[in-house]
Length: 257
Ligand SMILES: NC(=O)c1ccc[n+]([C@@H]2O[C@H](COP(=O)([O-])OP(=O)(O)OC[C@H]3O[C@@H](n4cnc5c(N)ncnc54)[C@H](O)[C@@H]3O)[C@@H](O)[C@H]2O)c1
Image (cartoon, rainbow, N blue to C red; front, side):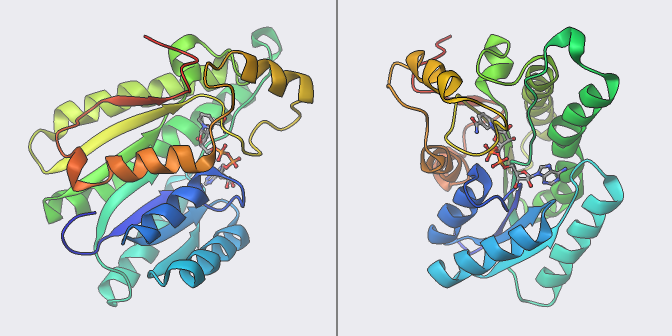
């Protein structure tokens, strides 16, 4: 948390068991105001109501398709309107969590699938960051945290295959290039690369696959959403101010560089 309360904008924060909602709740508990953005607007509003009731933090919810520029700009304007009306403090962090995966083998992928997975994960991170970054630069303080995956580092191997691995790798390149370009603007941009996390993202997974995933994790279990939210909370804190363009692995030892 910065010295004064700021708003953390978190995308993909609607899913009831997802990393985004857990991160929004954690940041609200840590003293942030939060803007919960999600494709599923009713879910975003439900998550926001729950977090506000639990924490008393200022919480705002809005629908967004992170892959669609007009939708991202509309969400940005909606957050700014709350800030300008004094209902939210200024934006201090952007956490790009919205994402989708796909287990389709390479030769069975279609261009449509490739484009969709790239659009939500990579283009979404680009569009949301581009919309909110000027506010962070103007404030002279900001934290951007991008959601990659161990799949980017080891070439899939959990559930998602080529489009997912490629999109999550693009996010690492984006994070590094933006970090370099931001210089000393007071804004840091870093990424997290979780291994398997116990959420509902792996649509169509089987008990066998989930057990096989756990077998490859030295810590003997998948990550909880709280494991990931805790690392993101630290990356958005004052303490992480000298990290720039880096990636933090949250994989229980399943992939070691
Ligand atoms: N669960 C894992 O094992 C795991 C591991 C590594 C990385 N990740 C990444 O973490 C992020 C969150 O994953 P999760 O497991 O919580 O998944 P989830 O499916 O529970 O949540 C994803 C959220 O993103 C939202 N979303 C999807 N498309 C969107 C769009 N176009 N615009 C806005 N919101 C959109 C969904 O509505 C949902 O609320 C994803 O980027 C995922 O790739 C997950």
